Length: 289
Image (cartoon, rainbow, N blue to C red; front, side):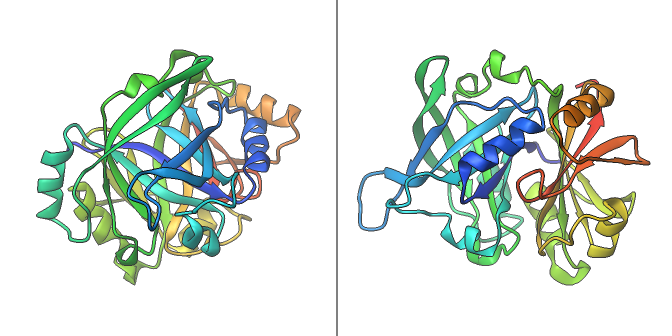
């Protein structure tokens, strides 16, 4: 069993302001806007990118919303946005990046060695340095999106107590559901990345991460059964995120008040479609944590 856990999922949009409004209607409290920066072609130092982000932080895991705010700058996410707007980043958390990379390299190719990263992140009314080390997948080999395996060095900078009190009662990022053809090889890639074996569960292949959280793969027919009426997602890609909340009835009342279309399932959950949730289904289940 591996030690990886589900850290976050990154949604990418062209219009960040519109995306923020959609998630706020779902009852998410978001961190202040933070400009992204990193490597830029032709530059030796890190430089500002075209994009900024907001995050919805939970006790376990979070959602990241990335959007274009400075289009004159270099945009490392252009190829992803050209495909579709929605979730393109699957981030898993590790304890020690070097140790994880050594184990990962024995299971699967096409991941880069750990890279030290640092940026200033919103903290209270100011900013604080946010330090982390990332293991990145090589995009050409993973059509389902970008994988990031992250060693958090200053997790307290983004997991701020006041940000984790979500109006909709969200407590945890429980599962990411990928939609893919069974012959795509995606399930094998996820198994090799995570170090876990899958088992069949409610019409999908499910991997339980050793450190917490789940990844699963469902085909288009299974997706249509699970989320009737939702548009068929592009494949292979993350098609749904499952969020644990304190009370479904509290959430339902909030969604009704905000004019958000939602659906009840026979799994004792609520879900909203991609039009309401920035490009993928978000499903809510009641949980203790």
